[in-house]
Amino acid sequence: MKKKDSSMRTINIISVVIPVAVAVLLGIRTKPDLGEWTKILPHLNAVINSLTALLLIVGFYFIRNQKREAHRLVMTTAFILGGVFLISYVLYHLTNPSTSFGGEGAVKYVYYFILISHILLSLVVLPLVLRAFYFALKGDYQRHKKLVKFAYPIWLYVSITGVIAYLMISPYYA
Image 1 (cartoon, rainbow, N blue to C red):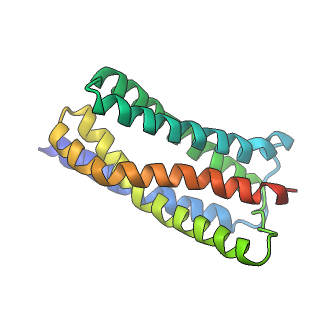
Image 2 (cartoon, helix red, strand yellow; image 1 turned 60 degrees about the horizontal axis):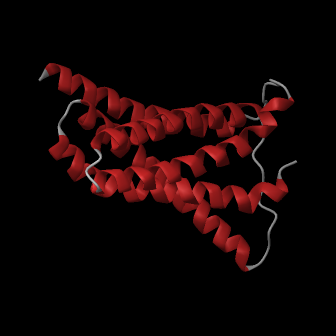
């Protein structure tokens, strides 16, 4: 029981530390210069979010068709891509100022709705995905299945809205 409590404690800590670290990074005014290559990171993030969304859909297909090993491989890849995304996102925001959306009128409200819902749900989905992945690794498929009923649609929404937000703001990158 101690190992389980320790793992859940670690998941809880990660679920708080990552959003706080990202918020702090967004507030840093003096950005270190790691080179021009960091300017491509938003484009990489959009590709990662696109691949993640595709993998989530494929993973859903596999589990619905009782292809557990294929499901495990696809979902593990999606989980790893989430980690790569996080590193890329942090690197970009550590080294580059935030880009302002330049659209006007109704599209501005649509963009901010998508962006705000994306951000808020990314905070919600992080502990859900970490727990779901942990339960799957431990073979606790009953708890995994119960949790992914909530985690899956939120993760899919966050992945898709990440791409939409990118497409909407990409014309305004310097």
